[in-house]
Figure 1 (cartoon, rainbow, N blue to C red):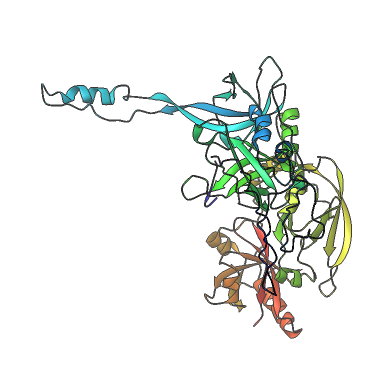
Figure 2: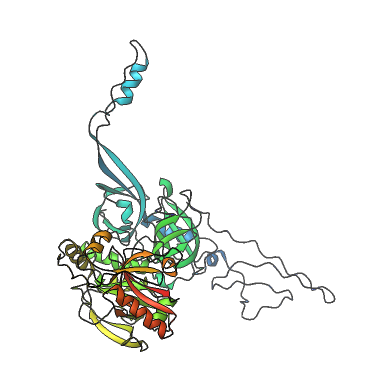
Length: 540
């Protein structure tokens, strides 16, 4: 993840000075000078005194806030977060870990100083206990928070890693050994359990979907091992994808988050946890106001599963996807750019029953709109295994027909079982070879040199034994196909959603599209690593 790091504090916001009284209206038509703004009221409206001394339409005319009212938590941010922080600090903990790592002998020969030299004692101390194998302890520090008074603690998976021991340090000085209940690398969440022998202060998970860009949020954690630290900022963005995992949907905030804040909570102004602080972007390792938190709505399902099963049990459709862009939408006969394109069906998976086909555009899942290919995996993963879901698609019944809406029903499998099945299939795949095409002559079209899939092509481009279609043997450097990322060794298996079995068939289909006046060709490509995607190449 380029530029992103796994992870402080800013002072509480101070009340702005009282706005001076509006000046007397000047004589004549001179421009009036407006009064300075005053701090937000407890209902969130920012009052501003107009130049003529009259209240703005809809502005509050109540008396100024008292100190108690000013410190009351609201969505729009109180004048101080001291009372809110006081309520939450005891539930935020420091998580420290240690891991024994084998240290092989370094092979450093003994250092000998001249006889009688005082350096010999220095050399002896330098190499003491460094000869031969041994073990050293690797330690890390992070943050976490209690979500249940019985001792359930949430933190980041990367905080605990492969630790041999996990210790939770409480603000009152208590130190307790923690048991790992479960962890999930895909969302970077881990759940711990401590036995305190008494109810612990805890915080509640809130609704991250209720957050708006610009809302105030507060981070509490343990930056650089300094101890509990509070920082405040706003929600800078939502739905960020930083390539940290398959379910990226981060909250971005400018609240100071530094190393050691990982696993700590991000609170809204009502004291609810709306995020788990996870990563920062920084050239220095310190906060530059770009921090990322896992939304609570994404985390809650993972946390519940880890608590109940010690592992995750995610829904699985058994398909491969590609993003739908404008070019691909036109090639598929779709008038919208929202949705995800089905690029492949996993054999033996839940969708391997004819319900979905390559080229289908999924526009809704279980009643929710699918805006892009990043949304669907997250929706499916959050859905219960074994549930029958309605999936809205756009499908072309023929090449010349427009895509029409349809609804299919699929019973979800379990992702973890699917991953295991696919791994086993990869290692035990049948070596039955497809028969090579009779016509082995190379053809050129769209700036591509194409050949048939035969024994020589399989060997040269490391193609699978069951590979079929036409293989790209060369790409013109300045061609549109090269700009689209087409490379030698890729297979063309469809042109305009019609299967092709040889290089000659590809050329024939392209010529037909040109005669029909089509300006682009929609190609279905398979890379040597098995990735499948659509590419739209202009027809010269």
